[in-house]
Length: 19
Image (cartoon, rainbow, N blue to C red; front, side, top):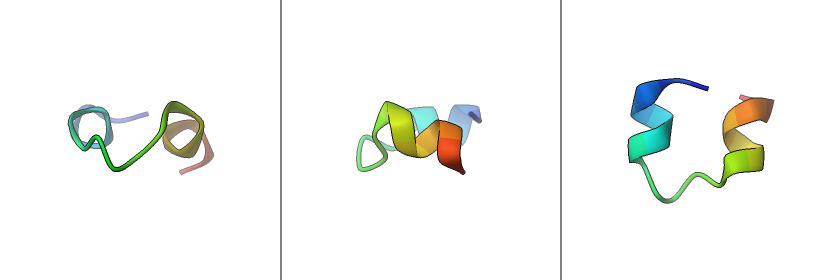
């Protein structure tokens, strides 16, 4: 999980780990 993804609310927590 990157900080950029974390900032993007459109990405869910599960999505961040998948990416």
